[in-house]
Length: 291
Image (cartoon, rainbow, N blue to C red; front, side, top):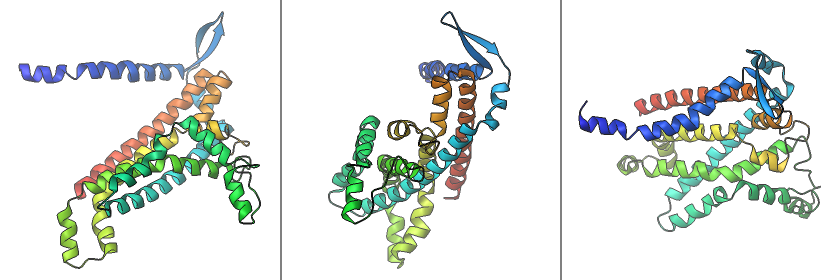
């Protein structure tokens, strides 16, 4: 091996060691924990091997099923709306020649707000007695709504907050994708007399597909891990109306002290997210080769 090649490999080793220490080892520990039950003896955790019984309990867990269903509804609805709004905002922003930085700053402000502050702000806005949303409804002659206390509205209310918070993320990635597209193709299409809709349908969307898929996958992964907004706004309630998978894992791990079973849930969720990444990676590669 030449000296140059050796040093190129050597520069990667610190990052590889960090990756192993911070990712692989905790993941291996979580996997080992999922095959055990943990009990505390004299303040010392004792692992008892139970094999795959923790995984066998997963299909019969009603709370887990509710969490998975709500997570899928939450992720699909929230991410679809965020992608649509983010793409429209990105398209509009690219049409602006002056003041683009101003609009870009305005649009990304929600993503800069810490989650704890977002929870406090929206909890006040959703308040049944004095929230601004119910005040607006009252001004319009509509009865006040129990945004966070109604089983029919609670998940929708959380989705609205997530859309407000994470649409800027989609906007930024899609705007970067739009700004990287070659101008000469659009100029040629305009010279040939293509309409705005034809340019969007036949040129912009096909060229943007890899960026759209990557943005969609990133947001779906983050949406599957949603926790803080649920914890701060509803605590998973009322009932199981806003129970999501991360909150179910939290309950099993910390509230009910079922570490092994919680670890099995975590491994299952990691497997689902890994499958999404693989599918999206292959889809992106296929689109990239076609474009």
